[in-house]
Image (cartoon, rainbow, N blue to C red; front, top):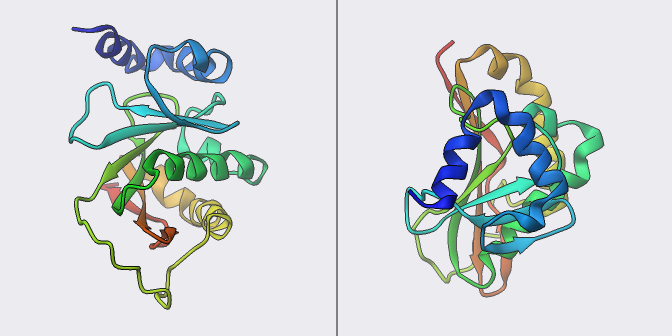
Length: 187
């Protein structure tokens, strides 16, 4: 087991969630991960135990245990930084990507974090700019906050849930191609 795997095991101890959050808030520069993208409010690095070749974590640099601690109006800039950090991590790699955050029984580390994965649907074609859900980063930030507000009670009653977003990188730039939605696990 390497250092990164050991840190992940420690991070999964729910009682230590506060320490994990504080380490990202105050010591993100000292963590033993190869940072691929960073903004003032979020950091992105390769998942210590990736489930697929392109599997990264985007984590706010603030102690926020769950998605619903993040998704409040006063954290609008942090949500925006998470989205911008994901965009920077993708860089110029064209394709479709998923950004997802787990909640409840699906969340194994008590610091909100987003998984950035490649959907492996490669396309250099521009997305349909007339599609119903093509959103800018600012519009998506507002949509995430509103979706969490609307779905809060139902999701928090569920055993677990995952917030999912999709983005497309073309030679022309990045577009968020789907409004945020929750996949909810039994009640």
